[in-house]
Image 1 (tube, rainbow, N blue to C red):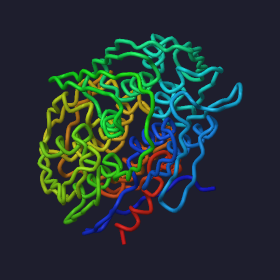
Image 2: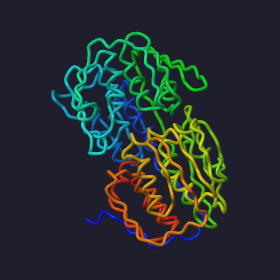
Image 3: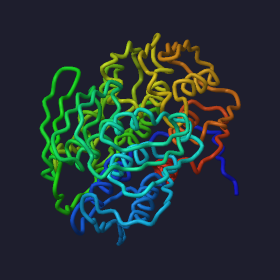
Image 4: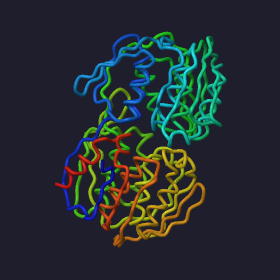
Length: 438
């Protein structure tokens, strides 16, 4: 099977309307919370990527039934602390850090030992960041030096805890929030600003939660919960997936794009704020609120001149999944762009800070990197006239998609391996890309 693509011509000008698949973060969170509800929940537009399918397969092993009918998914929850499973089960979380870290939070009450595994990329990532706080609830963990595989053994009486999340990791915060559901008492979380999908879902589901928002931190108080009612939810399109098509339009000549029904949650639109500072005109149309989440159609068009940026670090957490594509846009900016305090990028599917620099250097762009920062010396007249081979990147879907965008707008011959990596988050990426190129 040919698992690579070759790009050797740039995209022609376009004016298109597209719609992206469901938000991955919300798809995983909705499935996990529906599994804890008492009865049948209905989720529409659930993303059918590998990360979400691994979520479904893991929950099935825990006794949860699913029924799919076209773009609707029915999830039959068993209630809090009611997973029904055999002894010595193994949950394969694949490439999904969100799934692996969040589901552990729901297992602190598990009666039997449960093994959590993942793929080669996920097995390189730090899990002490979730096992350490979750141990305070009373659960026990056996890890491989803080990495997968992990064996979880719950406690019959989880205790509420006080927790400080200082990395800006929504995964760590959410794992503790989910664990707090299974306690008798109040869990207090002081969390550095990060995406707040879990908080909004808790509110929508009437789970007892109180949030006090301060400048740099959120203070979250969660009461142990007795029951979650089943719910209906339509998942909006993913802003992270949309960002690749935003970048494609910005970097292409004489092009316009409208992306329908995108989740523009304020904790997720750092990419939009950064690009606006660089001179990109992005317009939110038809703005509305659905169950706490802000949704809009995104309109963007080509930019003739891009400004360099000294990126404010307060935007990092709200753009953490989009920095590879932001770096690509900075490559065509006029001047030197600076991005700091990005060590969290190297906790993703691949060491993305290193890969961002590597791709730009292969394109002929000068960069200077440290362990947590990068300087990009932009070239407004950038054209690639060489062969670039992208491989051995731990099948990081965002490395693949960034490379595709680069090949389509900057020219050269690009040989990009492991195209199946997009199945992790965005299976229809190439199909939508082909529709734009027609």
